[in-house]
Length: 58
Image (cartoon, rainbow, N blue to C red; front, side, top):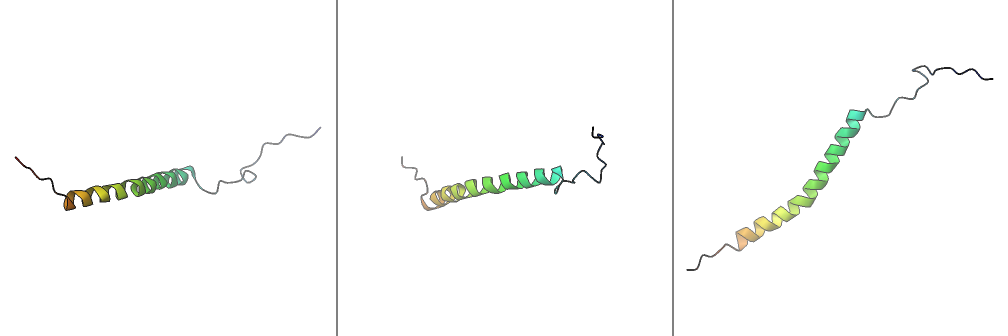
């Protein structure tokens, strides 16, 4: 029967990135994707407001 030995800290592989680094990467990705989605729409709205002013005819 084999002897069960608890692994020492040297035997446990260390994660490549810490958990906070992964969270920061995910948040930065969400921020970039949101800006890529919203900025073109905002640019179109600003362009239409500037080139087609509202006329108040009474």
